[in-house]
Image (cartoon, rainbow, N blue to C red; front, side, top):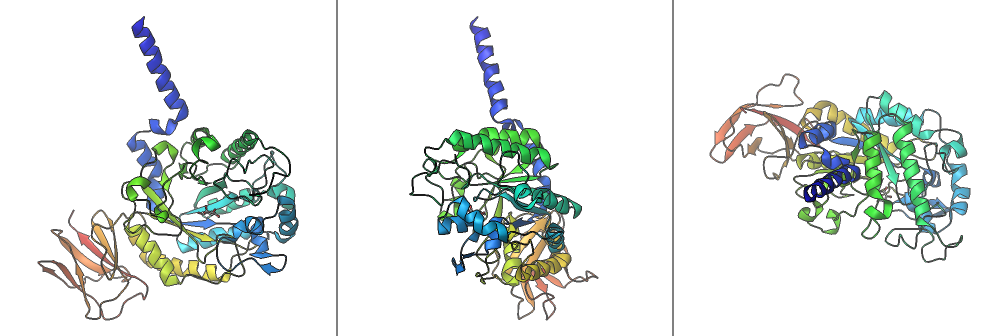
Length: 462
Ligand code: GLC
C-alpha cells in the first residue's frame, strides 16, 4: 500500500513536471540541436514598427524629445488610447511592398533572422486578431504580420515575433497591480473602474495562441518584459511557455517573461545565469555589450542604430558604420548574437541612415562573413588592436588598428599554425609568419584591406 502510494506520488510528480515545463524534459543534445541555427546565425535584424512610427517622436506638432525610445510616446505624453490612436492612426499608412524592402535589406546586410514587433506596449497589433479591433486588419485592412512573415521567409531568413506582455490599451490591464511597469495612466484612477487582471491574461494567452497558430513556423518568440513582482506568475508565464513549445516545438524563446538579473544594471554574470532553461533559451543585454560576454549561456545584445527603437524624426545620434561593425565583431568574439534595430516610418519605409549602415555592414559581411557565422568566443584575451573569433581549425584575427610597423603579434600558445592569410585576399596568399617564445609574429602588408576591420585567418592543426 505504502509502495503504491509512493509510486502514485512519483508518477504524479513526473506528470506535473512534464505539464509545467516540457522544455526541461529536453536533453542537452536536443536543446543543442534546437539552438544550432541561432548559435550559427550571430546576426539578426530587429524591427520596431507600429502606430508610434507615424508620430515620429512628435506630439501635436511638438517634438517629444531627441533621445530615447519613441515607441513609448504614448507613455511620454500620458494620454489614453483614444487620444493616442486619434493622432496616430491617420499617420500609420503602410505602403504596399514595405516588408519586401525590410527583408531584402536584412538579407543583404548578412542578417540571418528578423524579429519584429507583433504588438508593442501601446497594444496595437500588427496581426489579425479575433480578440480585438485594435489591430492592423481593422485599422488598415491588412494583416501586416502576415506580409512581414511572408517577405522574411521569401528571403530565406528566420522569423521572430517580439510580443509585449505590457498592454496600455487593454481596459482590464491592471496598471495598479503592474506597478513595476510603465503605463500612461500611472498615478491616475482607472477611468473604467476596477480592473480584472485575469481577463487581460486570458486575452494575452488567446493572442499568443493566434500568433503560434496562424503564421506557420515561428522561429523565435521575443517576449517583453518583466520586473520583479510583475513577472512569471503575473503573466501565467509557465503556461505561455508551454503553449509556445507545444504549438511550435522548435521555437527559441528569450527569457523576458521572468525577472532576470540585469547585466546593464550591474548584476553579475553569475546572477545573470540563474534562470532555468524552461524560462527561456537566451538572455538579452539591452543597449550594452557585457565586457566579458556571458559564458555558459546563450545571449543576444539588442541595440538601436541611434537612441530610439521606434522611429523619431528628431533623433540624429546615429552610430557610425565603424561602431556598428566593430560592435558585431566584439559581441561575436565574446560568444553572443547581435540583434540590430531599425525603426521604419509610418509608411513602412526605412530611414536612409539605416539603409546606408545596413548596406555597409553587408559589404563587410560579404568579404568577412566567414569570420562571423558559426564562430565562437575568442580563445585569447582581448588584444589592444582588435578581436578574435574562432571555428574548429581556424582563428580569425579582426584587426581594428592596423599595426604601423607591419607586424601583428598573436599569443598562439602551443598551437601549430599551418598558414595565415587575409580573408579579403581572393588568392589566400600566405603571409609570412615567425614563431616567437611569446607567440606568433605575422608580417602584414602596409595597407589594411579594410579601414574598419581586416580579418586574418590563422589555420591551425587541430
Ligand atoms: C525595452 C523597451 C522597449 C523595447 C525593448 C527592446 O524593454 O520597453 O521599448 O522594445 O526594450 O529591447
